[in-house]
Amino acid sequence: MNIPDNLFYTKEHEWAKIEGNLATIGITEYAQSSLGDIVFVECPNIKKPCEQFEPFAVVESVKAVSDVRAPLSGKIIKTNQALKDNPELINQSPYEKGWFVVIEIKDEKEKVNLLTSSSYNDYIKELSK
Amino acid sequence: MKAELKTTPLFNEHKVLEAKLAPFSGWFLPIQYTGIIAEHNWTRRSCSLFDISYMGKFVIRSEPGKSNLEKIVTINLAKMPLGSCRYGFMLAEDGGIIDDIVVYKLKKDKWMLVGNAANAESDAAYLKRHLSKNCQFEDVSNKLGKLDLQGPFSRNVLKRIVGEDISRLKYYRFDYFSVLDEEIIISRTGYTGELGYELYLSNKNIEELWHLLLKDDRVKPAGLGARDTLRLEMGLPLYGQDINRQVSPKEAGLERFVDFSKDFLGREAIAKKNIKKRLSCFAANSRRAPRQGYKIYSQEKEIGVVTSGSFSPSLSCGIGMGYIDLENNKIGANIVLKQDDVQIEATIVNKPFYKQGSVNSHKSQVISHKLQVT
Image (cartoon, rainbow over all chains, first blue to last red; front, side):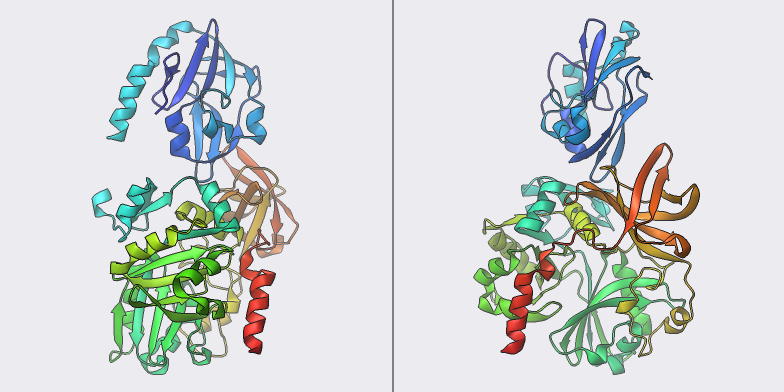
């Protein structure tokens, strides 16, 4: 299972790449693999706020509809337009081309509530038992 | 929980193939092997193999007049030639659907019924209750395996294994073929809209036949996920979702599978029933899929409910089925499907959604015409 070192994770299988006061957000390899073929994504408009661990986007696979929760609170400043016509990018490249949004981080201290790659890796192993 | 679920004789094969398994109707079954969309598309373009061993299967050894089977099903059994099978229903007295089934006339006095896995126990109980006491009834669900081979190449794939004779099988006909020292039943039937076959054989040979079929490069395994999107694109109902004990074949738009020229359980009730809603198909104007339970609206007025929905891999949009009030049920009408914050604009359409299926392809038509001439 691919779990890049430089990202932070949630127990709901989202990731955040933190660069200065900005964070890029997506769903993990484990999430895309569990969902199966993703066919639709609903992302909020830019300037909308998001709250840590609250739903901000929706992904639909052939079989299921799932909320995507924000790893950090903030304001959405950019959304991945490519997902509109090619939601399968999330399956193909969950950490690169399949990113959902970029947010302006509201409170950097919230980072302590997130998992590092090694603790997320342990968490996944526990789930798969 | 998993320990209580039943598994098919091919369970280990599914694990070897790293299938995603999930509970379905009391069984632990493969949902997908590589991915639903890839398996769906492969079925439409080439040929897929499905393990469908979980279906309910019953054998009745008696003539339908004597066994009372004629009165239990909506199909006119007296009119069926040997080697034919027919789709129809078992109904409750009030006309509600007990199950949708396929009946096989194996001999004049030997018939097989195939029904849904979820109904296997209730079907057996219903049959036992209504069959004559002196007829021989056997539930063969657990000893007879079933493989579905579906897709435009299925005939050519089977030719290599059972010989040229497979080409003689017309739609909704079956025959016995010698495979692995067993006489197995193969019918030209399916649930995908493609040219396809259903194979019934003993559990002991199913693993070997599974491998034999998968050796052909044109064949790949497909799971329940693709089976569901394939059937939905054809507008074929699924028991437990689109049809159930609370609706009659009339409401489901399936009265052509009910023969009113004969007597059967539930006949009186549905003959005089005035229906208020009908099962309809609709296509979304976007990639967003309707889902079971979403409400259907026409200009702010609630007019129905979604019973099945999915993304359609062939059409690249959301598609679904649901019951809609008759007065609002017009082909081409614009509707909105809603649940919480979700709003999907859609249009009522004719079935099937997917119209290029090889089940009715020119090629199979030509072959069956030739057979009728010779």
